[in-house]
Length: 447
Ligand SMILES: *[C@@H]1O[C@H](CO)[C@@H](O)[C@H](O)[C@H]1NC(C)=O
Ligand SMILES: *[C@@H]1O[C@H](CO)[C@@H](O)[C@H](O)[C@H]1NC(C)=O
Ligand SMILES: *[C@@H]1O[C@H](CO)[C@@H](O)[C@H](O)[C@H]1NC(C)=O
Image (cartoon, rainbow, N blue to C red; front, side):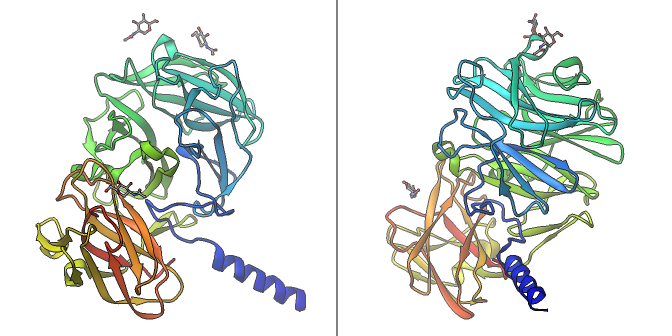
């Protein structure tokens, strides 16, 4: 009885501490509390365990430091494992080279895990793929080679494994002009034949999902680290004919400031996994994971500040919260109500920061720590930020990526400790720079 009770208490404590929600744009921490370093990543499922491979950019450099490997049973709580791939001096994967977008497949013929990645020199002049193999999901992997597939460029790439085990390299080729799909050999060590080319498509960062026998290709265009409107294409077979490009989200939001890195089927929908790159501070680039829903008939991103997946049911659910309009708050200093039909209620508060503040009153909290999303517009070409203070306490700084125009509204999350009952939240105090225009906040009951 007593040990059983202890076990129950222990598991309750674990349940309380484990995260249950996905919060796009937040600092996503692993089970040790460190920011997850798995940029440009890919997912591999082995049994009921998911592995997330990605670039460790903790050193804030584009150069190769490691391909990290994380494991999870729920896609939310991730435990860092040993590094899957680390630099090998004197090769194309030295610490002065580029290793990006690692993707791993299991090859059942050789009972082996095979990693493919974009392998390049520091000026991106080599444009190769690299391959490494291992006998367990996180390896460590043994590097085999880097080369140009079929003699041509390969930059931002992905892999696709079809139901019959045939695998394909999806890649930006020919100086990023042509996008190609090329079959792998049965070992997954090399490419054999090109099956499709989207000529002049300028696509990169691809992923493919098969749904009801139709192939859906997702990819961004090529704009460096800056976001662009990512696209979808469909075809009855990988060789085509591929439909012409269509948006996965409204164009002005530029894929909610993200770039595709992987697309994971979830029931009859999928999960879009994207990177929100921050080139000046690469290790602080965030992950934008969103439901990719076919409910409208075509694949579209569903913006969700806070959401969760039910893996057993193959469904997702988007949390709802309580909205507080910024223009209903108490303004201080030089802050001003500004009008634009893009804002909820047609108004927002501008000229925040540099003396201007707004305090939102009577914000209901639960006392347990909770996610709050700030809806804002930042028409600059660079990031802004805003200070947030709860009940007059210390300020927290929240980054506000440029939204691509002053009438494009995005949201960024911050976890706040609101007390149970009524709170005030002040924005823009204690900062000399202008913050984004604040449209509204949404307070969620989960933290
Ligand atoms: C692809 O590579 C082959 C062999 O190196 C070369 O002859 C051909 O010109 C390349 N194609 C393009 C479009 O660069
Ligand atoms: C891939 O195959 C081509 C021939 O099709 C060959 O020239 C090349 O060396 C192979 N690359 C590797 C890494 O095996
Ligand atoms: C906040 O944003 C301003 C630009 O508006 C920038 O100069 C400053 O470095 C940012 N602060 C931090 C800590 O990122």
